[in-house]
Length: 244
Length: 391
Image (tube, rainbow over the protein chains, first blue to last red):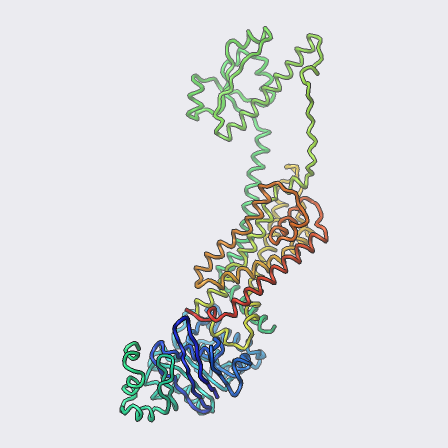
């Protein structure tokens, strides 16, 4: 479970995150929805301890990220916005590197990687160097790398960016499977369909603040719109929406 | 420390698969210096030796006016080329290099015991020719001294009158210290090789990693950042060290390939020399690897890092240039200055003088302190938020 309480972060005079709070529960997919520049990535970066919040608190499975960042990182599987691979290493070596950084023994890591290869259907390219991989192959490798230590909580920043329809469908199915196994899944996106297709709960962020929160159905009712996209536009305010 | 070892192993594995790194760090860096050095020395020495033994071709005008002089010159190695007209013009247009002109008045002056004139016509701005003119001048002066001595003896005077001052040069240079002069570029070459050896890896592991967007995922792993940094520094240091070791080996080989005996110098680049130099270089290798990682980590892109490191690379030239152009005496405090102390120690070893324990310890300790300070700065930089975030 991930709990975020009243996070603040500024860059110079720009208030990137200005009081964000939400809870992402186990066995649910929580969506962080907002236009570009709303503060989603910054919120997530504070969550996975890459940045320090100016104010506020992050709790992962009850552990305070400010007090024990290493334990929080161990409890998280993170697919950041930046997801570069090492192109002179094979996909297996890329994933194995992160397994070793998590302190996994080689045998345990190999077994876990084989399981991920089966789940994510990576058999075709797992032994190849990642130079020249397609977007889909790269994303699968990056996800396997993020999940190699079998974390309870999974954070994905714009996971479907740059994927084709088929790869997007496969990814959604994968995330639904994780939810079925009781994982806590938190993803950020600016795509409405993604939220509608996946999320149990939605947190809408605009200008660094949470402007609405609830199930997709609740949000539609709250805005008095039948379509989620219209509801989204109304909730974030039109000028921020035009930037999206 | 497991994190450090994991990062170190991965950086090495990745770099060993990169042909650019291998060629730069393990081939061009360590071997180019010694290779150029050997080629240069062989050509220089070979030419010097040849020149002394070779015949000296000279155009002679008016040889018939001084048959005895010509006989003496021929014995000293002069080869007579046929006379030409207008020698000055010929020399100026470089058709002819060196002309000796004996005027008609030579025989008359000679008989009367007056100074008899000979003309040397050459172009002193041409280095090649200037050296040969010098040699011809030497031959003429020799002959002149010999005749003067005979004339004094014939008049019943002591030849000692001719030389009120006797200069005796007692050069205390040993064959080894002459060798040190010759190998004086070696310390600088070794330091430069250290820079080249680790440079690419330092950039690739920091600025390169950020540019390729893999730094952020890396830092999300449960490993303290200073351990990640240490792994990268050690990987870079490993390459630096291998480069230096290869370069030293190549120089040792170069010492064996050069005709040092015939040059009257001796250089001992044996196992003992290599071992002591490596021990003295290890702290410097660490310091350089840390500085490179620090500077590269500050850069926003691979290209910017390359520019910064290019400037950093100029720093070791300062002590080298000081050592080469300012003939100051070695003093103990100099061994407390990183970069300078290593070069001094290597020069001492080359001269066949031992490096004392105090000097070695001072050099190692001060360089390690500098490395620790640099690591601390790098660690703080690496901990900053801006570093992790890909642009």
